[in-house]
Image (tube, rainbow, N blue to C red):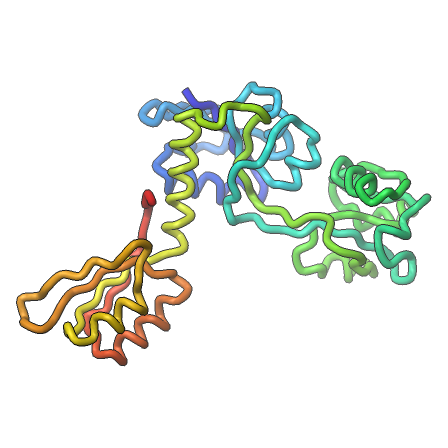
Amino acid sequence: MLRIAVPNKGSLSEPASAMLHEAGYRQRKDRRELVLVDADNEVEFFFLRPRDIAVYVGSGKLDIGITGRDLLLDSGSEAEEIMQLGFAGSTFRYATLPGTAKDVSEFGGMTIASSFSGLVKQHLADNGVEASVVHLDGAVETAIQLGVAQIIADVVETGTTLRNAGLEIIGEPILKSEAVVIRRKGAPADDPKVQQFLRRMQGVLVARRYVMMDYDIRVDQVEKAVALTPGLESPTVSPLHHEGWVAVRSMVPSKDAQRIMDELYDLGARAILTTGIHACRL
């Protein structure tokens, strides 16, 4: 049975569970559940603190897990990223009071506060900078005001919280993070259960990016129409009872669907419909 770690709370939890549900797996109904067995799919889910997931997977106690790239790298565990999941995106950056420093090269001898101390230490080492790192759990923007540090490193979305604290973002991003699937380094790459899981998750990612488009069009306009809707391999074209017309079915990127519908209509296409795709295999 495949043993999978899933975030039990925070910004990763609900999107991860939603994606697993779309992939056909059972998910817990009671947030107090810590373990859920999905016997039909031969999977056992363990709902853990997002920060601990990389440790469990890296130790080999669990086969794979879903966590943030930032949490994976901060953990220093023997786990590696094997798939990007496209949600919970964030940027990890330095911030300080105006005039303190411009980038990481000027941090020598200073103190940096962060909830991701492992990640910061590695970034400083990669840049050849010697500085002290203080680990704090949350609300690191107050560290400068209280004199604990001269610089902070934190997850930045809009930057409003930092600006309200009188701080400015400096230097290049330390890391761009998102939700990822991880496994233990050196684990067999061809494990059939893991590969099945990844195919299901990939199917959800594709299904979220595409819609199925159906339309009717005259035969003499088919080539122009299918140029707009080429599909993944090739669209399906079927003759209609009404002579001189065909029905076309094709997957199209959801972000382009409205524009494509307009262009098809201008070509003379009618009965243009789009439907959502809940899952797929490519």
